[in-house]
Amino acid sequence: MLNLDTRLRQAAFQRLEAITRQFSNDVPWEAIAEPVPMGEETFYIASRAIGIFKPRQMPDGILSIKTVVPKQGRVNIYSDGASDEGGFWYSLEAGGTAKAANRQLLISYERQDPIIYLMGVAPGRYFPLWPCYIDSVDLARELCHVSMRERIGDVRLVAETTGTYDVDELEKRYVIREAKTRVHQAEFRARVMQAYSNRCAMTGLPVPQLLEAAHIIPDPHPGSTTEVSNGISLSRLHHRAYDADLIGIDPDYRIHLNDDLLSTQDGPLLESMKQLNGHKILTPKRLDQKPSKEALELRYQQFLSR
Image 1 (spheres, rainbow, N blue to C red):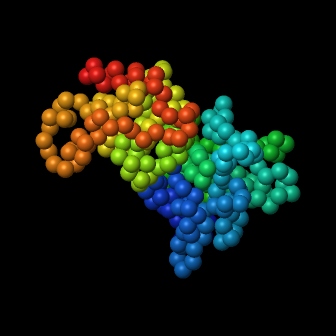
Image 2 (tube, rainbow, N blue to C red; image 1 turned 90 degrees about the vertical axis):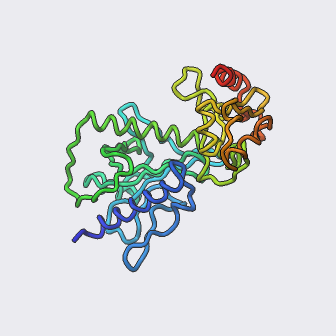
Image 3 (spheres, one colour; image 1 turned 45 degrees about the vertical axis):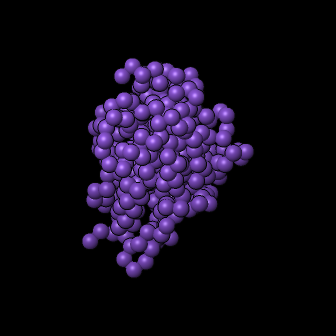
């Protein structure tokens, strides 16, 4: 029979798998804060007030670490970020081993416990990474180094702690690169969704689970940026149509459907899309977040050439 520590981690990973299916890589705090059932009781994955977290049921060690993106006007107190070694730096609580949270983190480091990293991508929004492992702890700098050794969100049987973990370095670098790519995508999506008030710019659909952040200049293109001005909030359907140049947006924010789409006759969904032709998209209130006219012109010329 699995011990309590392992059962807690399994249940936490399974909850994260469920909520990331629902919210993709941009999970609201409210979903993370829901209690997780385990047998006849419940436990929590993280705390709003603290970064290094251990549920009360867990004998020792930690379950999760968390960073936040502060609201505008507040100072970001975190020094966390990507490291040159691959993986991420995470700040310990000030005070070294005098702080109980740091002592519990050291236990998980020594045992190589699989933990959760809730990485803030926007105020109140998080990108969950799991299973993560603490590679090293620097008490003098009050930092620890965190990385992944398995595919992100791999909810397989959480092994009993063994104190050692051998991993192929090439595989580890691949997993870390995959994680950083997904963090980048989650940060971009969260900022675009916030700018557009969680609505589709074409239809006004206000269902975040059905929305995506479309790049005006595609990500692989050398002219692409991660600024909100290079993004548009679109429903999954309209995002696919935009990426396929079935729909274009001109520099005056006006929507255009290509001739093939306009001439196709097939049901109410397509007819509702046709009604967008000639209408303007919704845009953010802040001028610096509105779609770049230069980027729209470049992308619109691609649409016209198809």
